[in-house]
Length: 246
Length: 249
Image (tube, rainbow over the protein chains, first blue to last red):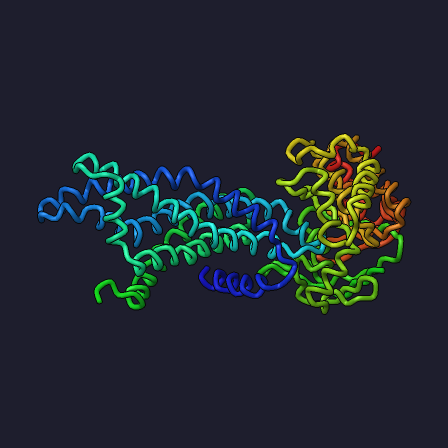
């Protein structure tokens, strides 16, 4: 499968620069995928922010460091939780959808029909979707980070008497450029993985409806796993480029 | 128009096409007969490289299909129509969008010309009222008709039909077969029809070949084949009559 995914990504790189550029399809997919995922990532982000603040509050109190609560919550959300949670939810929602959609098109010969009519289905169906997932996930991640910070603020207010302005000021004070840029940047890679795996599983689906089900399920499993593996690699890489302690 | 020589195709150890050779002349209607699983659909797909054959040559309009690069192949495919077994309409597009798709993508036509062609083909298949419907709202027979309309909208020189009447009731199957013949005469296309429906073959065919275990075992007119005393053909056609559920009288 890794061989197939590599070949698929090489083909993507070859085709993405060739005309015709399917700008309208990319725009359509970005809006569709973004709007579909917006509510679920919003709710998840809010709860994660709330829970993280609730968990951290007593721990920091134990060390007499309650004042650091907004900063530590902000850093956790911006560096790691926001991007990864958003990417995992996005993988569950989008990768399976793409896998099922393209898988269904494959087994009902719609992709063959496109090919026969002289249209390059890889460029029309695959390149547009991978491009859309790659660029919509970072936007969703910024949204999730913002929502998570609101969730965290509610938890902070429950235990400390703190204004929103002071809370945000503390978060901005704590979160550095070297926290925000790597956190959001890695979601371009996660978005690419979600699109790539979903498209690969769907595009190569076989054996009728059973194959479509398998494509959908394995798209989620593989893309989630790859997101976590690449997160590990990218964290190491970004810590090397932007060290947290100077 | 079409010249196929020594075509071979295997899937793992299963040989599906075992040296298939035949010619189809311009404006001829050729039927490829055979039981299920004898490689009829594989043959069609190998002809336009939806599947890559293991060996052999395919010439369409004098072009060696197996030696064309992707760009040349796509150019050639613009002159070929293909009706898939399940019609293969694009689920996410309306009937109008399905019909417009190959025109918008491949031909530099203005909106007026596209509309004209869409209306023409829908009238030809008697489904103008379905223009704004989605494929999920259509019956099996209607899907086949729209699939046929989409195949002919680019005015192809060669039409390939993969089991055009499979899954349809005898009356609709007869209507589709008659429609194929009418369009054939009107548009003067060359056709290759893969089927195991004898009624469909009788309506459409100028000539037929019989495919069995990946090889062409007989070739001739439908009348010659169906009235032949050859035990293989007698056995084959008696089975086909049973399979078509009494639709051949």
